Image (cartoon, rainbow, N blue to C red; front, side, top):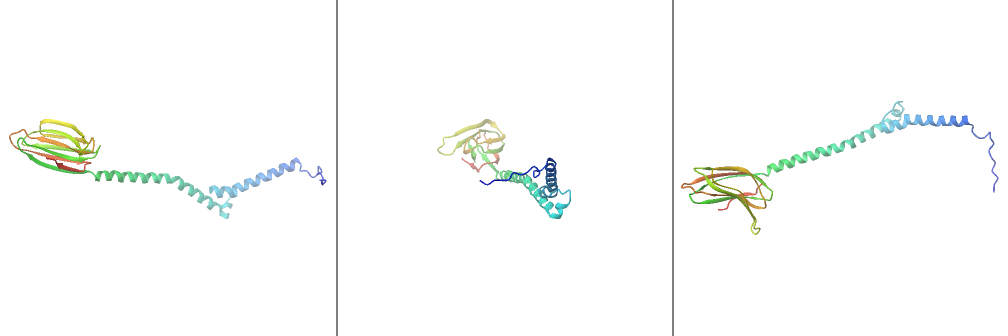
Length: 201
């Protein structure tokens, strides 16, 4: 083994020298923080040195990018809001409206229906002239489904209005019969989510 020479006590730093070195290192760290780190990371330059070295500009760019990143969620919300408004407008545009007027002779009957999908909604209104009619508001599913329902019926009624919500896919509408001794005209108006208005018989 090699014999290593042990340092003498005079070669070791004294307590005052250690304290002095610590203070110098701390001072250097503070100077670097103020002149380099703060301008480069946060765009803050209390001494002006960061501006000379171009570090302040770097910090300002970083801050600008952070602000833009934080603002992005708000832009997405606005886009979603616009999309929702477009969807609402589209729904209104797809509403269908139809009016049909017919004359029912004494003892005869007619049936008018609108074709609808399940849960579709249509607003309706009908009125008669020269008399009242017996009616039945009902629905029938497409052929082979064996579905049927009665929504409302009445005797000797001259008008009715309301909202029809389809219980199933198929044809939903009105059956009128004239029990008077003279012809009676009826006018039906429907607005809403339906495919077509059709006279069944």
